[in-house]
Length: 234
Image (cartoon, rainbow, N blue to C red; front, side, top):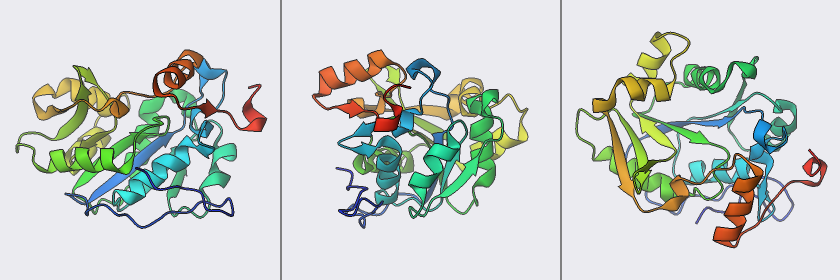
């Protein structure tokens, strides 16, 4: 389970990891720049599970999994999200033109990494159930990959999920390519170098894009997602 990211005083708090060290040193980019247009133009990462914003749950999971360098990419709603991240120890970067789309945010995040680790993990801030064990499982499988595998993604019953993890060579290839190239485009163009991590863990598939996704999540898990009071009406 992911340790609680909120202390009794209401401030962000991160407990030391109780998991073994990550199988490979890794950096991470947490994507939180979207417009949430299909959710009434509200920031998906501020949805709360058990009263905790999803973005703080993701940061806690990444820290517990042993991330070295964690960059959070903000765009739309940056002014609303950034204050929540104070004291978390993450590095925040803003996409000055998030309307350009997710690729531009990915590339900004990749540019900010210090490049000291052996792997890069690209995570989404709207996956409510991803916890530190899920991340460690993915990293451990990546550590055992064949040499020709440069990118790995979780796959559940034939469906690709998130987060994805890749080598610094992939990061460099994306950044040296045209501005229209992001991780997905690299993966599509280099299928022989991208391998699935087959799993039955539904956590890797669940993200929140629409009101129907919220309803489905609550119905299938018995858990509740809610908006903070100032976001309930959009």
